[in-house]
Image 1 (spheres, rainbow, N blue to C red):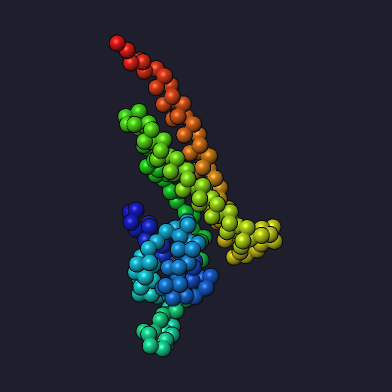
Image 2: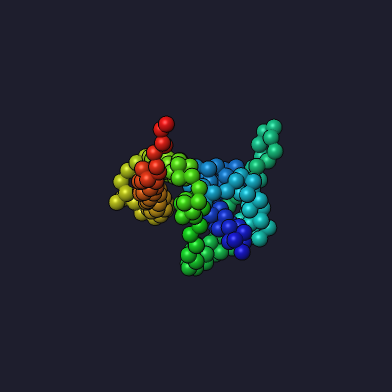
Length: 199
């Protein structure tokens, strides 16, 4: 079931990308690398494989474009059926995704391992989240300098970006709280240990 849902989500993400602009498989994969992939990741191989299936299902069409000295490239676009399917999917309620956070489970089991190692891992997770937050803020400042004036596709893209900003900021704040709590616990544990007896 998980694999089916993941495949369906990738199909829909690719159709959203093609609804914004037609493109080659490479261009769509690049779009995932630059923007969509921050919210739904996919490898280039997965993008190409899914495009092939979307074409077999009649949801996308392509036009061959002749290139000098190179194989023809395919420029994909949504078919009429693809646009209908995308509209239906957008209007269908999305089930709530269960929270799965391995580092959260590890924190819960921290008493069974080395607290210092757990703290280090949370610090690394915080740094990744902090860098992602900076990247998102950069996108917001560069691409959406006047959010109140946005409409249509630009507004929708901005709102998704705001979700990423809030999620990354929340992760940073949570990591700070976890690091503080575990560090206090480690310090108390160290203080409670008996001092070595000198001869």
